[in-house]
Picture 1 (cartoon, rainbow, N blue to C red):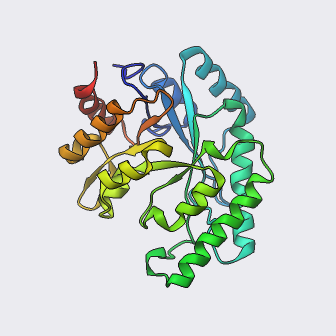
Picture 2: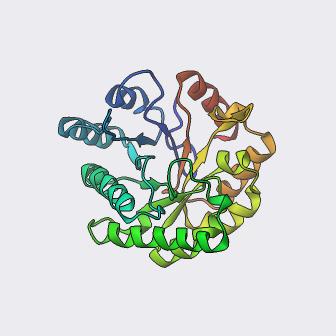
Picture 3: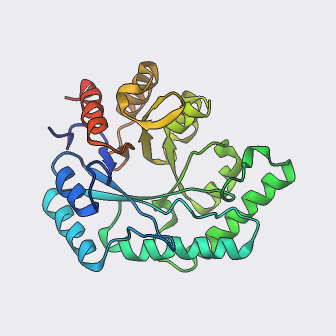
Length: 266
């Protein structure tokens, strides 16, 4: 069972498919997919940041099995927060992960642009929306002044607000996009319109189904018309560097998603 080299894009999934740590997951996936999204986090309570030995192991497995890694930066970073000290803490978290994983030559860095825990950007006034975009810009200026990775390798993910809100910021830095199809569906954004608007700068797609308002389910739970739409666009616009990440978190969902995806494979 393998998706490797079967599509005009890289097929990937997350580093949490079997109930184990990162390295065993990579061993399980190394011959099944082209790319693994390393979902990393760091907090006062816990951290799953790889050790130096783990990084060396990831690099070796990647080289031996033609496997690339995309890096999902920590979720608890708030680049659009109004408090400069919160933004600085977020920038530092991102910087540590970037410096740790840079040796892996990642296919992409996936990043969220959020205002803060529980802060609903959609409820902002026009002035607050502008402030959010300005805060994101300030955070990115600080981040890119301290790292060597090119901004185009960073992919801002579509969340629960229209990406147009920070579209000028994305363009001004030359950032890429993570087009999360599951999020677009969950929050009611038009998938075709977003594909038309952002595919040219989309370096990563996140694919997952929805059950009873809960996302990150297997691809068997996607609407077939949406799945067909995305696959047609990707076949019509081939890009061997683009990553199609099945953003799911169980072996059952991985197996079912593989079966759904292979209906389109050669």
